[in-house]
Image (cartoon, rainbow, N blue to C red):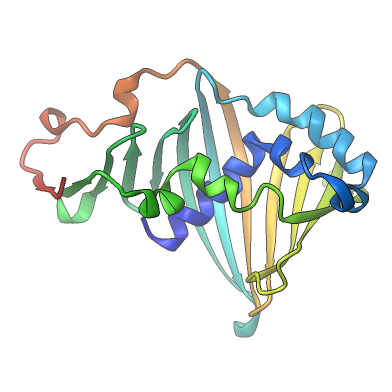
Length: 225
């Protein structure tokens, strides 16, 4: 799983597990803005992935060091608990809770592995979120109007100052509190924006999270289990 995939998972899994960000105890509670928490509490309900959730998105990379040069990558992720299928940039990554399948279409090959506990920190939603769920201060950043749409903004500030990002901004539709975008402001001058274009709640079968070799004739299978 490359860094781009991990970044996408982090974005989307933050949305399905806002509770983790709100579960800070003791002194950290003073860093949680009550208004921001209230909004995220309500938004959480819209991103319940227990039975199945499909999210279409665009990932926008903005390089401020090169005059704001932008690269846009469309993608889709299917989520159900710790299972997922992520399709982005010609690569489909499947994880069924035990086995990972990475299918690279242009190479016509799929690599199959059973990730170790250490590997799971990069690819498993639950492991990924554990490193982030209590590491942020939270602040309500206000309401704005963009193209006639009223939006609410919440800023998250990492407690770990060595983090690559200084601020993560979550944007919600003011009326429905449905997620619109997440922006990570990079310290190195590279910003990453996830624009959510569609969210569909639908039950997902186990087969959605396993690569089907029968349906991909001629594909080279590299089984590293």
